[in-house]
Image (cartoon, rainbow, N blue to C red; front, side, top):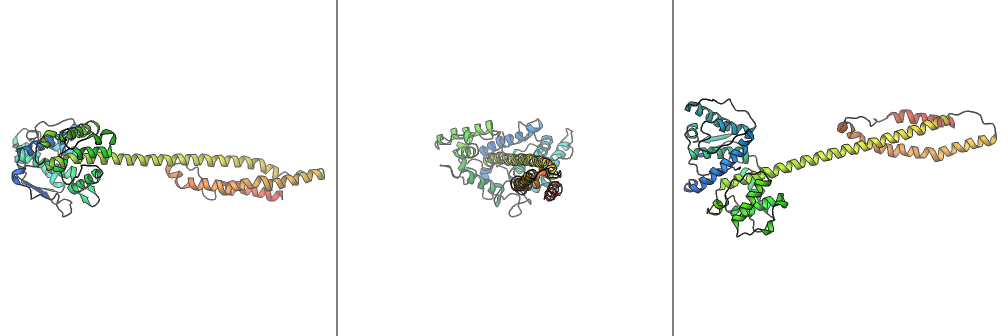
Length: 390
């Protein structure tokens, strides 16, 4: 039940917000004015805009039934703007008089204008009076600002960026050639291709037929509503039965796919980063455990070796002296070299890999600093004992 679209308004809207030429949204002056007032387009817009508004208002525990009537007092309009912007608007007036309603709608329009949107020929009085064309035009302006303007793909943004995104995503699919936001979507294959590209398990694309657009459209709408939390904003029969579907309605609905899939991609990226951090932390934990085991084993060996090296008790016989000398030679040739190798290779490798991230990743300082205790104490003691043994 979400859609961003409005055509069929005898007004103009524009602005000085961000855009390639400083305009908020380029105006499509080549549109036929009679088409803008086409009842079929207005019907599509009503359904789409109502669904789009309700998709946001439901977050605040409310909804609208009639887009012409339910925004007249300005209360739900202000609430809608607060939900989609995440900002607080001025406190609304709760009175029932016309002046209170006008003041509320003016607060909403002022907020829209503060976001860089220049509203032309849309006044609070028309909204309060229930002017359908003005109301649809106002909602379309809101959709442009908060749902489409920030879409950016490579060097393009807004409508052009959304179109480029669709073209890139649907390029590998047969019978899909997205060139616009009206005729290109009429057979329903483009909608299904977008879903299949991101969630291939939801759509059996190869079973879809280009000559059965109603089935294609309904399939995409139902899958999107059930699995992607994208409300149904369009009717398949209305799209197929219209020579040229309403561009704003299609663009609004397609933008929901963009936000749904880009949001999922961001969540996946964040999850991957978290997994990477956890993996690094686990590796650091293992490195620190290895380091501590090496240190413990070396301490035990030194603890056994130093007393033996410091033993100066005289030997009673020549054979005992020769045996002690042979034991010392074994120590120098057999026992000491592996420990020196552990220190120079294993220890340095472990501490070097662990040191850069152990403190920041785990908050622990188990990794010794340069010139740590093993260098200043253990090995000095061992070396000293060895020299004395000589």
